[in-house]
Image 1 (cartoon, rainbow, N blue to C red):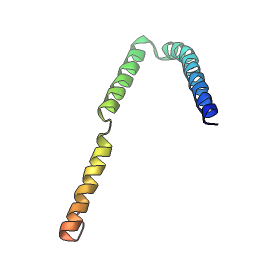
Image 2: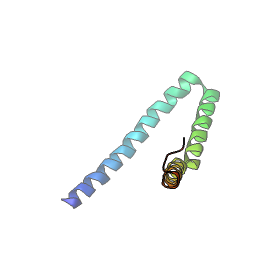
Image 3: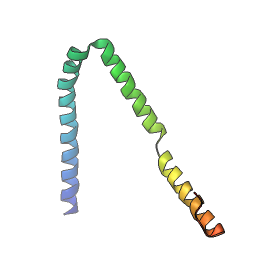
Image 4: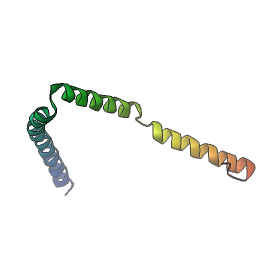
Length: 84
């Protein structure tokens, strides 16, 4: 049963790749037609910047939550109350 699920997962991932490629072949010429080359370049630049910022944020928000809760629990144990 596990082998079958792995096989289905592999097939679905390849179908996803093919569908994304086909949608890009249709979407990009339409986008270029409607917004033009310079605006498309700006659109790609903004998309790249968002991708870089999301990579830089990788794990940062989880780390902030972990350290904040750790600090709050330490204050609670020390003072008996949660500081705001």
